[in-house]
Structure formats: structure tokens, C-alpha cells
Length: 485
Image (cartoon, rainbow, N blue to C red; front, side, top):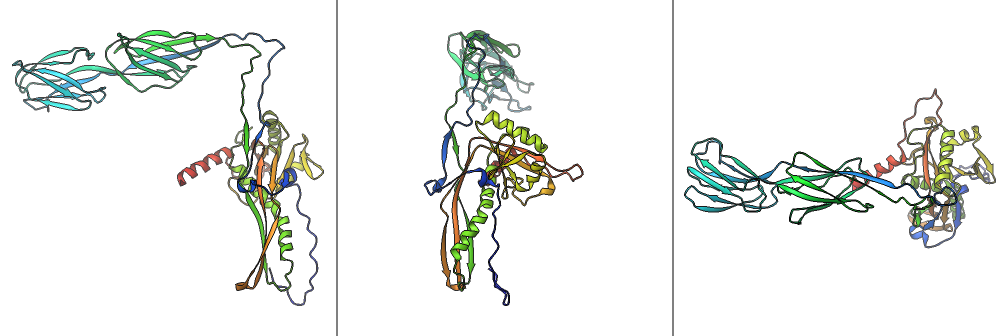
């Protein structure tokens, strides 16, 4: 506090009239201590429940609903074991090389020109060298391996050209669903002996991981939820290109009086508790009303500080954007929020605007006074908060010249607050008497939240910088939080 100047006469300060029509004028204010001061409150609400309607007084059968999907199996290039020389210039020896996509190790029986038999195991992606001499060598795959040819006899000559021979053991098959399919399809693939080779479900526009199939013809059974019976088809591997399967079925759509919409409990949570305070400090000489002075100041500053907290609380949520992210005229914004609240909220919405915007509402005859509250022509309460930010996600000083602000609409606002209290303390090092007045708040709004970016700039004014949408602001905060963590 400043020191009085000698020679001047001390008189009583003029009476102060706190500003009106802020957040606390439209909120339901509950002053009482309680456990909510520890972590806030939550409650179950019906204000945002959705319903429906039916035509007529008697139910009428609906036409059957037809569902269709296209499932495609695409065999890829064959995988197997390749027989090659160790190098382009090698004059002896061969290497058996396994394809990385082989489903498992393959044992190849090798017969030399002299009739000696050797079992060579080739792992997927691995290789097994073999010493060879001139003559006819025979390479035999195990029975039942599904090879296109189980035995190959090749003539090995020192210094001859490429010795390579590739036998296909399996073909990777990938299942995919067309993007315009209406339902997920479940499929089961069986080998001729009835063994299940693969089973899975593919959503519209998705595909399954590739699985290796041996050459042959497979039975396919596929169906979808709601189909009365599965359908069947055959899959030939390797086959000639992709092999599509079409699935179509109809099911009972019920009657015109079916009421399928189902909602559970809708819970609303408040923001966290915060405490508004004021601090006065002065030499204790003739400073006998420290507590009263601190309490008087608290009553004057708390509306503004509460509005700042609520504005930041809204910035942390993701509101509906009835007109998108573009800035619109004030009348358009107000009409959009009133209409949107009627569709998605069961009561009168509460509107929130920075205090500097009030003249524009009044000039357009958009608000009127009803007791201590300002309301729109449709009876919605509106708060012109001295602590509201033009852009809550980027708090800053009010910018009337910029001509843009976010107009918010919420459900009913409740402000729970404790009894105000004050503590005094004397600080000997500074010979000061300190008094701190405090009050704890928790703010919540009912389930509805929407926002519209408003422009009130005149055509001749410089175009203001665009304010990011609340959803983009929320996404940016989440991204920043993840990077920080």
C-alpha cells in the first residue's frame, strides 16, 4: 500500500458498484462448504437425452434390408526352395535356398549320380550348401508338400550355365473386402480333407494378413451377421488372378414402430476446485481493518477471476461446431447456437461472450434485461464476462479492434463455492500486517457445449487473424501433452 502524503486530508473512499451481468449473474450459485472442495462434483443428467418419432398410430412392416459385400482372395507369387550355384563362376557345388515366406522348414531329399541319398533341411530364408559332381542329380520334396512337382532331376556339369530350378511349395493368399461393402464378412477355408486352413473376419475396405496356401482347390464358407445361412464357393491356388466372392442377403427390418435408440446414463463432471484470493499488506500502524479490507477486495475481484477459470475450463473441452470453423456474423452465430441447443439440449442454454462484445448485441436488439439477468429474445441467459477470453485456448488481453471472438453456449452453469474466509499474520522482518481473503470454487455446466466463431469487424477494418477452432485447439493441446510426456 502506498504511504499517505502529509498535508492531504484522508476521507472515505467512494462506494464501489461491482460490475453486473457476468457469469455469476447467470449461474446457479451455491454457497456452502462440502467434500466437493477436494475434487469437484459429478452428476447424472437427462438434459442431453435423444429420442425419436414414429409415423402413425399402428406399426407397419418395413421393407427388408438388403446387405451386400464383396470378398476377394488374391494368391501371390509362389514361394519354395531354389537350387543355385554358389556363384556365377562356381564350377562345383550347389546351394538350396529357402524363400523367407515359407511357412516352415522344408526337407529336400537329394540323390547323387551314384545313388547316394541325403536329407537336406532348408529353413525359411536360409540356405544349405551341397557338394556336387558332374552327373544327374535328383531333388525330391516330401510327399504331401503341395509342390507343383515333387521330383526334379537336373544334369550338373562343371562350368555350365545357370543350374537354377525353382519349385513352388506355397502361395501367400490375402483376403480383402471391397470399400463399398456394407458388412464385415467372416470366412472359413478348408482343404479337400476338411482341415481348416484359415478363418477370419474382414471389415469393409480392410484386408487380412497373407497366409501361405499349397496349390490346390479349397472350399470356402462365408457369412455375415444377419444372414440366414452361410454361402459357399471354391478357391483355386495359384489360380488366375484375384478371385472375388459376392455376398448378398436380406433380413427383417422390423416395423415402423420399432424404437432401437438406446442410451445409458449420461454423467457430467465439473472442473477441478480452484481458490480465488486477495492479499493486502501494510504497516500495522493505523491498519486495523486488514481482514475487512481483504474481504472487500475479494468480493470485487472474484467475479473476474471465476470467469477466467471458467473460460479456460471450456477451452479444455471439445464443443460442437454448428457452423463449422469459419467466422460468421453475430446474428448468424446466435441463431445457430439457439437452434443447435434446441436440437441437442433439453433446456435453455446459457451463452458466454467477452464483455467488450455487449454493444454489438444491444445494437442488434439481441438481448434484453430481466431483473439481474440479460436474456436473448428466446429467453436464453447470456453472460458478458469481464474475465472471458476472446480465444480461451490462447488467453490474452481483450482485442475489440480485432473484431473476432468465440461465442459459447453451455447447459445450465452451477457455481459451488465455499464460505469466504480470511487469515491475518504479522511478519516481523518487514514489520507488516498481512491479510489474505479466500474462497474456493468448483464450476460445472450441464451436458451441452457448442461454440461459433463470430466476426463483428467492419469491411473497412483490417482483417483479423483467424482464431483456431476449439476442436483444433483441443487436438493441439493433446498433441503437446503427448510430446511433453
